Image (cartoon, rainbow, N blue to C red; front, side, top):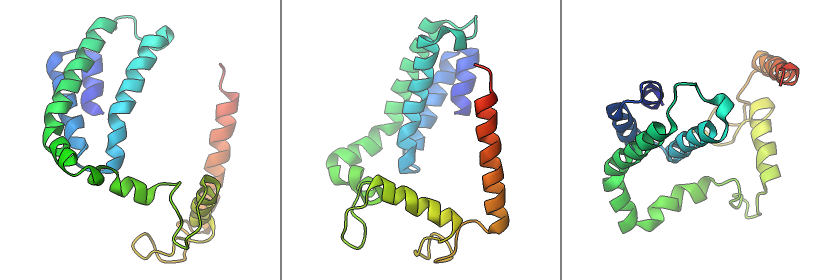
Length: 166
């Protein structure tokens, strides 16, 4: 993201290439990194479609040309992992299907999005995950002071959001 921000501000080809190479390497780190290219594309789309967000000196043609360079560098960095996924297509979706919010729950019933949202809320507030590798089994992620700070922060954020002039 730092490299992309630098490329966005300076609009130099080498910065776009560095950003693309780093995004491509990021895809090797964790599955959620697969969303990073989408974030960059959403940012560029926002600048393109919402002119009031765009700085006056920003050249859209140069930005999109830079994004093409970024994509090319990202693809070059991704080639070995992409080749592995082509040879082992199950590896691409395996972990994603295991942790999906729509996957079946361990007891055999189908877990809905609402069930999972409730479990996450309870994990933070009153009953932690029973898996020892995630936290102290059965203990909430936050203590009473953390819960108090969580709710105060949430209320402040909500009030500021509502009072922000549009």
